[in-house]
Image (cartoon, one colour):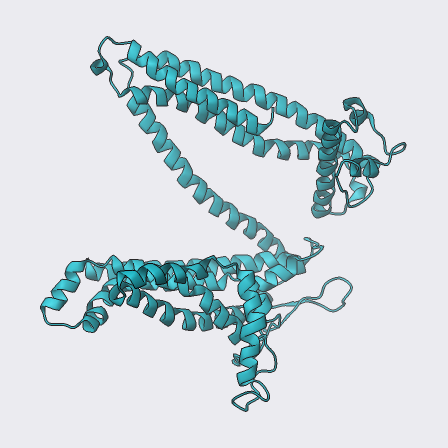
Length: 492
């Protein structure tokens, strides 16, 4: 049984358990007031015990089964067929693809179950047979890959059978155990509330563990990179010139030019987004009528829903040529500052437009959260509306506004597509905002695009760049927290 149908089955069992548990608890007493908990708690207890443990087991099994099968089947691939773990992973992806293709062929009747188990590359063009049922393979299937795929398929079928049995046993055990407890003196509410508390703790733990997993996945590959490339050179060199196989020369992998481009473009973006977004928020919250606010605020927030690739095309086709027509050779100002459309200013201005709704929406909500009593007190002392906004509202909302700006800064530092299309790919350290530069995120993409050899420093450097970017954004968040706490103490 597929995991989806299995999940639906235990969900139906849980729904039935809710009705049965509620009815059984009410039937166990002659007066409903003698129940320890409300009737719905007894039904929820049955549904919870029938569904939650089985669903958890199903989730763990679905995640763990491919990993276990992959590890048990990989030894069927001869060591002479691959050089490192990366090459083995590529081969195992082909194995899984062939195994799935055999399942499709059996399901469509192109192959019988026996033929799928006994097919041989010496007598059959497996790639062509699978292509007939719509399974496209990038290369011919050799004997070792086919044998591993058949083993993978057999073990996956066995694992699915055991998964179905185990999940149903756990669901039924929880169902009948909870039904037996559906009595009037049972403390069902306590059980349900503890279950909800466990669910909340689990959700919080998943968020924390996910962050930890991201950090560890970056950290291990970063350590491997620093075994191949000196950490001192990575953090101090002023040159970024990776040399992949076949190009000759040694790679120069200095992060400073990339960090400079990242911060330069982000600063330009914030110089555009912060005043426009903040002034828009002040107008919408303090001066605009309800009709204008109802029209302008959703229209402004539409900018947040535009894909970044569209902003990149806007930078490439509109902002860049417009800046060249003003600052380029033969432009309106008669200067030759800008040689092409891709530059820091192009990406920065476009990114600033993208960040306006981040600053304006958050700042608007924060300004509206300032107590009206503070405004009324200011008006009562004779202050005008502009003086109230400047001297009362904005200082009270400052921690939230700083948080909004720093959130926009984190968003700017992590942007990729606008930089790729608007700022170019040149890694340089220059103060000229009309020159092409690049950022950390753009180079992470370029280093991992195409066939990447994860045993080379040129590919592993992407993880070092990633963890550096993570530390930078973490520092911004810590700074925002410090500022918020400092100024919150002043106004509480």
